Length: 200
Image 1 (cartoon, helix red, strand yellow):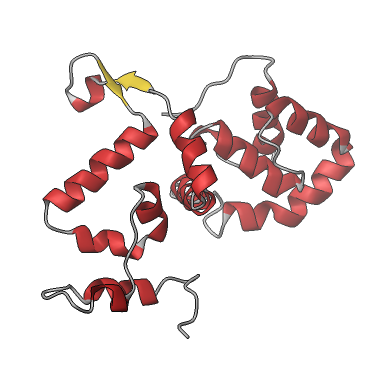
Image 2 (tube, rainbow, N blue to C red; image 1 turned 180 degrees about the horizontal axis):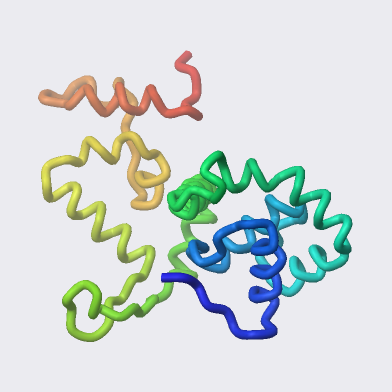
């Protein structure tokens, strides 16, 4: 379903700016997507604030907007003459990865827990009565619990930030050398972490 912004709103003006260059604005998935498209087309900083971005695009003037759009529109819209419908999904996935990277420090993890709050959405599309409570921290706990309950805890070994979130870690080999039936796959998974310290 196409996004609809209020008449006279900064979002509606930005939509008009980019729609003038053939972008199918009816396919824009949300405000974040709108701002990212505008940023890419007109080469303005994506501040996440529609009013500031609209002012920056407006300040380019007609000639400035034309020059930027003619330079960037093909890269934004692709060979098919319009941006990929999957682009919004890719953008959200990039944001999710960035959020995970940022959440890897203990301080950031504590902030995430402290700032986590319910996000109530309509349960009707999911055949549920009332609303669904999507609290990111609680949702992550449910997903991790489901993975462990399904006997696939090994999946989590690949994500040190998830281990850190739950106050856990993979031990050093020498710490468990005296134990039997230790699953060696967890050490192999940890050795593949991109930011793993080289072994001495």
